[in-house]
Length: 277
Ligand code: AMP
Image 1: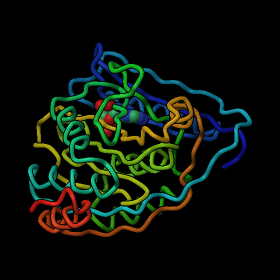
Image 2: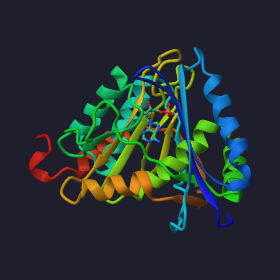
Image 3: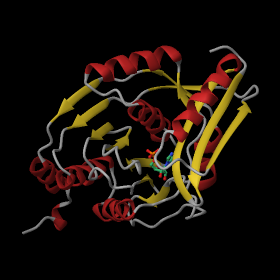
Image 4: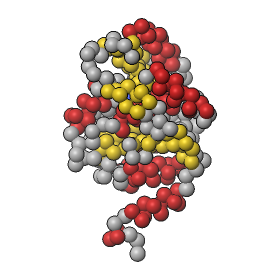
Protein backbone atom coordinates (compact mmCIF):
# COMPACT_ATOMS: atom_id res chain seq x y z
CA UNK A 1 0.00 0.00 0.00
CA UNK A 2 1.17 3.57 -0.71
CA UNK A 3 1.80 6.00 2.13
CA UNK A 4 -1.47 8.05 2.39
CA UNK A 5 -3.57 5.62 4.35
CA UNK A 6 -6.94 6.17 6.01
CA UNK A 7 -8.81 4.17 8.60
CA UNK A 8 -12.51 3.85 7.69
CA UNK A 9 -14.93 2.77 10.39
CA UNK A 10 -18.62 2.19 9.92
CA UNK A 11 -21.10 1.56 12.72
CA UNK A 12 -24.84 1.34 12.30
CA UNK A 13 -27.35 1.31 15.13
CA UNK A 14 -30.95 1.81 16.06
CA UNK A 15 -30.89 3.63 19.36
CA UNK A 16 -28.57 1.66 21.63
CA UNK A 17 -28.76 -1.49 19.54
CA UNK A 18 -25.74 -2.29 17.38
CA UNK A 19 -26.84 -3.35 13.86
CA UNK A 20 -23.76 -3.48 11.68
CA UNK A 21 -20.10 -2.45 11.70
CA UNK A 22 -16.97 -2.64 9.57
CA UNK A 23 -13.32 -1.68 9.65
CA UNK A 24 -11.14 -0.94 6.64
CA UNK A 25 -7.78 0.63 5.86
CA UNK A 26 -7.63 2.29 2.43
CA UNK A 27 -5.51 4.47 0.21
CA UNK A 28 -6.90 7.99 -0.37
CA UNK A 29 -8.09 7.16 -3.91
CA UNK A 30 -10.44 4.37 -2.75
CA UNK A 31 -11.89 6.00 0.38
CA UNK A 32 -15.12 7.30 -1.24
CA UNK A 33 -15.86 3.97 -2.92
CA UNK A 34 -15.38 2.04 0.35
CA UNK A 35 -17.51 4.52 2.30
CA UNK A 36 -20.32 3.99 -0.23
CA UNK A 37 -19.98 0.19 -0.01
CA UNK A 38 -20.18 0.24 3.78
CA UNK A 39 -23.19 2.57 3.89
CA UNK A 40 -24.96 0.34 1.35
CA UNK A 41 -24.17 -2.66 3.49
CA UNK A 42 -25.69 -1.05 6.58
CA UNK A 43 -28.77 0.07 4.64
CA UNK A 44 -29.19 -3.49 3.36
CA UNK A 45 -30.02 -4.74 6.85
CA UNK A 46 -33.71 -5.35 7.63
CA UNK A 47 -35.00 -3.28 9.27
CA UNK A 48 -32.60 -0.56 8.14
CA UNK A 49 -30.65 1.10 10.97
CA UNK A 50 -31.73 4.52 12.19
CA UNK A 51 -28.17 5.85 12.49
CA UNK A 52 -25.05 5.15 10.43
CA UNK A 53 -21.76 6.59 11.62
CA UNK A 54 -18.82 6.63 9.24
CA UNK A 55 -15.45 7.81 10.48
CA UNK A 56 -12.59 8.45 8.05
CA UNK A 57 -9.26 9.21 9.68
CA UNK A 58 -5.82 9.78 8.17
CA UNK A 59 -3.35 7.42 9.76
CA UNK A 60 -0.50 9.90 9.42
CA UNK A 61 2.99 8.54 9.68
CA UNK A 62 2.09 5.80 12.15
CA UNK A 63 3.86 2.59 11.24
CA UNK A 64 1.69 -0.17 9.82
CA UNK A 65 2.23 -3.53 11.50
CA UNK A 66 1.85 -6.52 9.17
CA UNK A 67 0.63 -9.92 10.35
CA UNK A 68 0.03 -13.27 8.64
CA UNK A 69 -3.61 -14.38 8.93
CA UNK A 70 -4.57 -17.14 11.33
CA UNK A 71 -5.09 -20.53 9.71
CA UNK A 72 -8.77 -21.36 9.30
CA UNK A 73 -10.22 -24.69 10.42
CA UNK A 74 -13.92 -25.40 9.96
CA UNK A 75 -15.29 -27.75 12.62
CA UNK A 76 -18.39 -29.01 10.91
CA UNK A 77 -20.60 -29.37 13.99
CA UNK A 78 -24.13 -30.02 12.70
CA UNK A 79 -26.26 -28.23 15.28
CA UNK A 80 -26.17 -25.50 17.94
CA UNK A 81 -25.65 -27.88 20.87
CA UNK A 82 -22.67 -29.64 19.28
CA UNK A 83 -21.32 -26.32 17.98
CA UNK A 84 -21.38 -24.69 21.40
CA UNK A 85 -19.85 -27.75 23.11
CA UNK A 86 -17.08 -27.70 20.51
CA UNK A 87 -16.60 -23.95 21.12
CA UNK A 88 -16.14 -24.54 24.87
CA UNK A 89 -13.71 -27.31 24.12
CA UNK A 90 -11.59 -25.25 21.72
CA UNK A 91 -11.61 -22.35 24.22
CA UNK A 92 -10.25 -24.74 26.86
CA UNK A 93 -7.55 -25.87 24.44
CA UNK A 94 -6.60 -22.22 24.03
CA UNK A 95 -6.25 -21.76 27.81
CA UNK A 96 -9.69 -20.51 28.87
CA UNK A 97 -11.29 -22.16 31.91
CA UNK A 98 -14.58 -24.00 31.42
CA UNK A 99 -16.19 -21.56 33.84
CA UNK A 100 -15.13 -18.50 31.83
CA UNK A 101 -16.08 -20.15 28.52
CA UNK A 102 -19.56 -20.91 29.84
CA UNK A 103 -19.94 -17.40 31.28
CA UNK A 104 -19.20 -15.93 27.83
CA UNK A 105 -21.60 -18.34 26.11
CA UNK A 106 -24.26 -17.23 28.56
CA UNK A 107 -23.71 -13.53 27.70
CA UNK A 108 -23.75 -14.15 23.95
CA UNK A 109 -26.85 -16.36 24.20
CA UNK A 110 -28.69 -13.55 25.97
CA UNK A 111 -27.44 -11.14 23.27
CA UNK A 112 -24.75 -8.68 24.26
CA UNK A 113 -26.27 -5.81 22.15
CA UNK A 114 -22.97 -3.91 22.52
CA UNK A 115 -21.02 -2.39 19.66
CA UNK A 116 -17.79 -3.86 21.01
CA UNK A 117 -16.61 -6.97 22.81
CA UNK A 118 -16.73 -8.19 26.38
CA UNK A 119 -13.25 -8.42 27.93
CA UNK A 120 -13.20 -11.40 30.25
CA UNK A 121 -10.72 -12.87 32.71
CA UNK A 122 -9.90 -16.22 31.05
CA UNK A 123 -9.87 -17.97 34.43
CA UNK A 124 -12.60 -16.45 36.61
CA UNK A 125 -14.98 -15.22 33.88
CA UNK A 126 -15.05 -11.76 35.48
CA UNK A 127 -15.77 -8.92 33.06
CA UNK A 128 -12.99 -6.33 32.80
CA UNK A 129 -14.07 -3.92 30.03
CA UNK A 130 -14.23 -0.31 31.27
CA UNK A 131 -17.72 0.31 29.80
CA UNK A 132 -20.09 -2.67 29.84
CA UNK A 133 -22.69 -0.88 27.67
CA UNK A 134 -20.25 -0.28 24.82
CA UNK A 135 -17.64 -3.01 25.21
CA UNK A 136 -14.28 -2.71 23.48
CA UNK A 137 -14.01 -2.31 19.70
CA UNK A 138 -11.01 -3.58 17.78
CA UNK A 139 -10.23 -1.06 15.07
CA UNK A 140 -7.74 -0.17 12.35
CA UNK A 141 -7.14 -3.47 10.60
CA UNK A 142 -7.66 -4.80 7.10
CA UNK A 143 -6.34 -7.22 4.49
CA UNK A 144 -3.80 -6.06 1.92
CA UNK A 145 -5.39 -6.17 -1.54
CA UNK A 146 -3.38 -9.24 -2.59
CA UNK A 147 -4.03 -11.16 0.63
CA UNK A 148 -7.76 -10.31 0.46
CA UNK A 149 -7.99 -11.66 -3.09
CA UNK A 150 -6.15 -14.84 -2.08
CA UNK A 151 -8.18 -15.52 1.09
CA UNK A 152 -11.39 -14.89 -0.87
CA UNK A 153 -10.23 -17.44 -3.45
CA UNK A 154 -9.31 -20.04 -0.79
CA UNK A 155 -12.55 -19.56 1.13
CA UNK A 156 -14.67 -19.61 -2.04
CA UNK A 157 -13.06 -22.93 -2.98
CA UNK A 158 -14.45 -24.22 0.33
CA UNK A 159 -17.89 -22.73 -0.38
CA UNK A 160 -17.43 -19.75 1.95
CA UNK A 161 -18.28 -16.57 0.07
CA UNK A 162 -19.80 -14.31 2.76
CA UNK A 163 -17.87 -11.09 3.45
CA UNK A 164 -18.33 -11.72 7.17
CA UNK A 165 -15.97 -14.70 7.05
CA UNK A 166 -12.87 -12.92 5.74
CA UNK A 167 -13.62 -9.75 7.71
CA UNK A 168 -13.88 -11.77 10.92
CA UNK A 169 -10.60 -13.56 10.12
CA UNK A 170 -8.88 -10.17 9.81
CA UNK A 171 -10.34 -8.97 13.12
CA UNK A 172 -9.47 -12.25 14.87
CA UNK A 173 -5.91 -12.10 13.51
CA UNK A 174 -5.37 -8.64 14.96
CA UNK A 175 -6.98 -9.60 18.27
CA UNK A 176 -4.97 -12.86 18.57
CA UNK A 177 -1.76 -10.80 18.66
CA UNK A 178 -2.94 -8.42 21.38
CA UNK A 179 -0.70 -8.31 24.47
CA UNK A 180 -2.44 -10.35 27.19
CA UNK A 181 -5.06 -12.06 24.97
CA UNK A 182 -5.78 -15.76 25.41
CA UNK A 183 -8.64 -16.36 22.95
CA UNK A 184 -11.75 -14.89 21.34
CA UNK A 185 -15.30 -16.19 20.95
CA UNK A 186 -17.80 -14.66 18.50
CA UNK A 187 -21.06 -15.22 16.82
CA UNK A 188 -22.92 -12.57 14.86
CA UNK A 189 -26.09 -10.81 15.88
CA UNK A 190 -27.21 -10.92 12.23
CA UNK A 191 -30.31 -13.21 12.41
CA UNK A 192 -29.43 -14.83 9.06
CA UNK A 193 -25.81 -15.63 9.89
CA UNK A 194 -25.45 -18.62 12.23
CA UNK A 195 -21.67 -19.18 12.04
CA UNK A 196 -19.19 -18.09 14.67
CA UNK A 197 -15.68 -18.91 15.78
CA UNK A 198 -13.12 -19.39 18.48
CA UNK A 199 -9.72 -17.90 17.65
CA UNK A 200 -6.29 -17.78 19.24
CA UNK A 201 -2.66 -18.03 18.15
CA UNK A 202 -2.63 -21.53 19.63
CA UNK A 203 -5.71 -22.96 17.85
CA UNK A 204 -5.98 -20.76 14.75
CA UNK A 205 -9.37 -19.46 13.60
CA UNK A 206 -11.76 -22.30 14.36
CA UNK A 207 -14.98 -21.70 12.45
CA UNK A 208 -18.19 -23.28 13.71
CA UNK A 209 -21.01 -23.06 11.15
CA UNK A 210 -23.91 -23.35 13.60
CA UNK A 211 -23.57 -21.47 16.87
CA UNK A 212 -27.17 -20.24 16.87
CA UNK A 213 -30.50 -20.95 15.16
CA UNK A 214 -31.52 -19.09 11.98
CA UNK A 215 -33.63 -16.06 12.91
CA UNK A 216 -31.96 -15.53 16.31
CA UNK A 217 -30.86 -11.86 16.52
CA UNK A 218 -28.62 -12.41 19.55
CA UNK A 219 -24.85 -12.62 19.43
CA UNK A 220 -21.70 -10.85 20.55
CA UNK A 221 -17.99 -11.15 21.10
CA UNK A 222 -15.73 -11.95 24.04
CA UNK A 223 -11.99 -11.34 24.33
CA UNK A 224 -10.51 -13.61 27.02
CA UNK A 225 -7.40 -12.24 28.71
CA UNK A 226 -4.70 -13.45 31.07
CA UNK A 227 -5.23 -11.16 34.01
CA UNK A 228 -1.80 -11.92 35.48
CA UNK A 229 0.06 -10.50 32.49
CA UNK A 230 -2.56 -8.02 31.26
CA UNK A 231 -1.91 -4.29 31.18
CA UNK A 232 -5.42 -3.11 30.27
CA UNK A 233 -4.22 0.24 28.94
CA UNK A 234 -1.65 -1.34 26.58
CA UNK A 235 -4.23 -3.95 25.51
CA UNK A 236 -6.84 -1.29 24.63
CA UNK A 237 -4.27 0.92 22.95
CA UNK A 238 -3.20 -1.94 20.66
CA UNK A 239 -6.78 -2.99 19.81
CA UNK A 240 -8.15 0.48 19.22
CA UNK A 241 -5.31 2.44 17.68
CA UNK A 242 -2.47 0.34 16.24
CA UNK A 243 -2.95 -0.08 12.47
CA UNK A 244 -2.54 -3.70 11.34
CA UNK A 245 -2.49 -4.98 7.78
CA UNK A 246 -2.98 -8.72 7.20
CA UNK A 247 -0.64 -9.39 4.31
CA UNK A 248 -0.60 -13.21 4.03
CA UNK A 249 -3.60 -15.56 4.07
CA UNK A 250 -3.51 -18.66 6.26
CA UNK A 251 -4.18 -22.26 5.26
CA UNK A 252 -7.73 -23.66 5.20
CA UNK A 253 -8.97 -27.10 6.26
CA UNK A 254 -12.23 -28.69 7.33
CA UNK A 255 -12.70 -31.23 10.11
CA UNK A 256 -15.58 -33.01 11.76
CA UNK A 257 -15.35 -32.48 15.52
CA UNK A 258 -15.71 -35.36 17.91
CA UNK A 259 -16.69 -33.61 21.09
CA UNK A 260 -16.03 -36.83 23.07
CA UNK A 261 -12.39 -36.79 21.86
CA UNK A 262 -12.11 -33.25 23.05
CA UNK A 263 -13.57 -34.09 26.45
CA UNK A 264 -11.11 -36.98 26.81
CA UNK A 265 -8.21 -34.73 25.84
CA UNK A 266 -9.22 -32.12 28.38
CA UNK A 267 -9.58 -34.77 31.09
CA UNK A 268 -6.11 -36.17 30.37
CA UNK A 269 -4.63 -32.67 30.60
CA UNK A 270 -6.04 -31.90 34.02
CA UNK A 271 -3.61 -32.21 36.94
CA UNK A 272 -3.72 -35.62 38.70
CA UNK A 273 -5.32 -34.25 41.85
CA UNK A 274 -8.38 -32.93 40.01
CA UNK A 275 -9.02 -36.02 37.87
CA UNK A 276 -12.21 -37.89 38.63
CA UNK A 277 -11.59 -41.05 40.59
P1 AMP B 1 -20.89 -9.00 13.93
O1 AMP B 1 -20.06 -10.21 13.69
O2 AMP B 1 -20.48 -7.80 13.16
O3 AMP B 1 -22.36 -9.29 13.85
O4 AMP B 1 -20.62 -8.61 15.42
C1 AMP B 1 -21.04 -9.42 16.49
C2 AMP B 1 -20.77 -8.66 17.77
O5 AMP B 1 -19.38 -8.50 17.92
C3 AMP B 1 -21.35 -7.23 17.79
O6 AMP B 1 -22.63 -7.22 18.33
C4 AMP B 1 -20.39 -6.52 18.70
O7 AMP B 1 -20.77 -6.73 20.04
C5 AMP B 1 -19.08 -7.24 18.47
N1 AMP B 1 -18.20 -6.53 17.51
C6 AMP B 1 -18.45 -6.24 16.22
N2 AMP B 1 -17.41 -5.61 15.65
C7 AMP B 1 -16.46 -5.51 16.61
C8 AMP B 1 -15.15 -4.98 16.67
N3 AMP B 1 -14.59 -4.38 15.61
N4 AMP B 1 -14.49 -5.06 17.83
C9 AMP B 1 -15.03 -5.66 18.91
N5 AMP B 1 -16.25 -6.18 18.93
C10 AMP B 1 -16.96 -6.13 17.80
